[in-house]
Structure formats: structure tokens, C-alpha cells
Image (cartoon, rainbow, N blue to C red; front, side, top):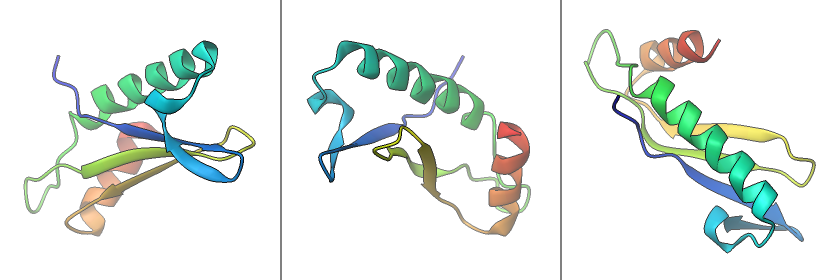
Length: 87
């Protein structure tokens, strides 16, 4: 199955750092799995108007562990399609 690349940034001591710079293996494993799951779901999404998928997909995790999905989209129709796919 195709998968869309999802970059993960984790807030560590007030600074967003890439997941590969996080030292806690349990955190890395959990967020890598989340990124993989999101990437698989988003790989199936495309804009009904422009036939493009989301780009520059990233998960930004705050200090409380809440993940915020961010991405570039061509229009609101793609945003709606992403929301529908992710539920």
C-alpha cells in the first residue's frame, strides 16, 4: 500500500524538534506508528476538483502529547476530504 510521508515534530522543553532527535524510544515508536497510520490514510485522499493530495504533511506534538495535523492543500475540497478520511 502506498504511504504519504509524514514529518513529526515534538515539543521538547519549549522547542519543536524532529522525531529523530527525540531520545525516548517509547515516544519515538508511538509517534512513528501514528505518522505511518496517518500517511497510509492520507495516501488515499485526493481533491475531487484538482485531483491532488495533501503535501508537506506534518504532525506537531505539543508538550501535553496532543498531535496537531498540518498540511498544504489546494483548496477547501481537499481539506474536507482529509477530514472525512481521518474521521
